[in-house]
Image 1 (cartoon, rainbow, N blue to C red):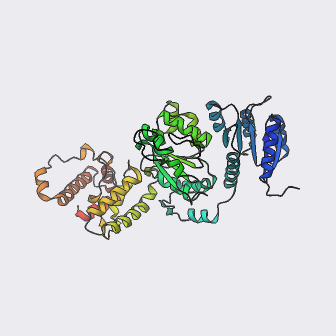
Image 2 (image 1 turned 120 degrees about the vertical axis):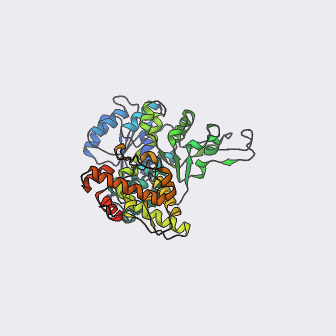
Image 3 (image 1 turned 135 degrees about the horizontal axis):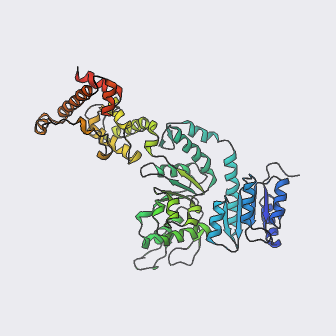
Length: 466
């Protein structure tokens, strides 16, 4: 009688020797192994038995492994499936990953390699179906700060939940989002919550390494491999062994480097430049891009087979303009950070300054907001940041309609008044003119000036406008 927690694996291969080899291997590892010589037999087994994982050959008479994958997915079965083949092709790899295969490996394969892939597949399935651990729940429960990422908006809570679920699986992750959204923080969080957290997290900025040096930097080289190679160098992949590699701006890789990277992911091994020694690449690959890589694939600028290898789990980080509810939290975080750094006690933004930020689109995202608050703290002499201490991108500011311009403005007179008094004077004039044009309606005047009703009411009182 099988133990209830013993995993049941199904091997589908038309070669008897391969079925027997895998059956022996799996049973030695403590799994219960079922076998089928073709896809029709395998489907019959799946209708009668509960199976935790399927390992299937691709090229078989009577039905291919790829068709089998499509069949079981059409039946609603989400059982992880590993495809194996002696006739590897990029087209098959792409179709396999598109169809939802967990992995695609070539014969002859390394025993340790397939054992690791099986283990990862089973853990991935468990993580997706199990409730979150208490540690993960605690991490998500801290809605203001998740692994160093500030946010409590519904958009960010979804990201936090996804990170917690995919981190233990060892699946490759592709993080997409605009510049400044915090993609590296997300990658670091995935590593920190993974089983490889005790090992290294190695970031590689793909567009910062010239193609001619990429292999040497990433894969390493031996002494004398090329002119200037005066000593053996350990590559970044070897440095990240058993840990995580973070490929930042992976969309910038040249076609040649894309091909070399694909080979490493497929074969899980590499050779340093000038060496005949093969090194196992036991690393998790987390990638990031500010480009839409699917569009890059369509435009033939990025390999489709590499895309599906990297994007086993795709994750999009929303821009700041889509999660404005997090702006006050981020402001508070950066105020504390830069007040401590500059030895000041700037504790808050004025209500109007906060309204200015909430109406702004942040083309540079969280990174831009941080720079705005850093400058604001540096410039401010009081403990509250006022609107004039905020430096926003001019092309993104709210524009005053031409109808509101004052033709009587004398710039020399304003220069003599000084900036603060000049701004106050012009602000008072514009509000007065808006009130006249709006027949005294504060609400309509606020709409003309593109500010909130609360803001214009405060300004009317401040400047004692009748």
